[in-house]
Length: 522
Image (cartoon, rainbow, N blue to C red):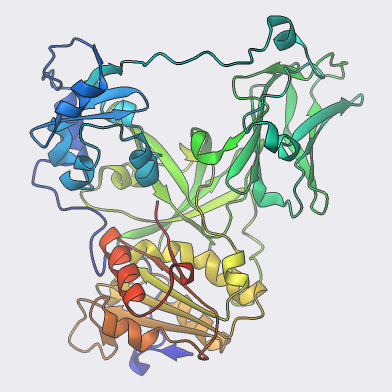
């Protein structure tokens, strides 16, 4: 179904992220941009008040610095004086004050674990937290035991404790004249390609297996060189993953290689640092007046599929400072025949990015030339396809580039979820020119009677006859309705932070449960 003004169809090709219903960041004062902060940190000014000294900070001392005009925060054992950063923080002073005078590691991880605070706050470093004495562990692995090897590898590191031992994945390997085959026994049914992430560069092999909120890591410096192309075979029913490497030289390997620090560990994904690989920019096409579709080519020795509803991080070095931003991959276009388009293969990532005129990061992205490289992380995100597979009504609330996680979600819902009766996209933008992929969305609505799209503008021109306004309880009560009184519903929402937070609250007030609402945040 299609709810647009008749005279507006067909519309010109459209695009993405105009903020509607709120802004992603707290408005900053003039002269308080990221570039201004970088300049300040390089000015030689004493940012800590300690004249370059590093000190050991006790809990009592940390607690004294809990005011806006004197604010210290601890992150992973390091203490930073964030007082000078207050006015530069995109999330606002109030967010920083939540951790004032305390260990803010957990709060930091919840909000933006991906930010390289060491780089951003290096001139604000006060020192380390004083370490409290702790009792030695009861069991200490002997040196002789630690040196024992299994197929050339150190023994398994037991991260989860004895009760979880049987659930911990394990691995083995064998070889032929030409091949090295590594077998990972995940002990999980339903293993698939999206749960296996592999990278191999300069003999360094890194394989990560995702198991719910945990991951198993195989990370070794291989004994000999291998060719770039590798194969991955997955036995879904038994949870076995085979990694097949081609030897560069037909020599017999005595060991698989030397284990790296986190090899053979099984731990929560949030406890692992983000891993990046260099991807090549192969195309950059205009979507709207301020939004472009970037196509990135993964290295040949990388196996990576970004699951529906998950995002990656892009990392750039700008003026000597590492800057990281999250983006959700999309398809190259909305397929109208409800199949994955043939040109969309696992070797490419497509990112729809709004270029901000004053945006340091996006301006740097826009200056990239075809053939340039950019660092891309492994996928992150909590969304599960099962949330859609058990629903009968799916509502997608998107503002601006908050549309990006909806692209793959739309394709998955209309292609693979037969129990869905209605799929409705309510798309908020400022103007008609800001609407991303408008023509494709209109065609999709005509193609499948289950799908309906509603465009809502906050700053329409005078002759716009469609809906106008911003997200509100009355608007949501008009467009978000169960197809049946007891139908199972899922409402996904994404956009600038205020838009998402307001939407979640309005939906709660309208009687929707927490399980029925999924906000996309990064």
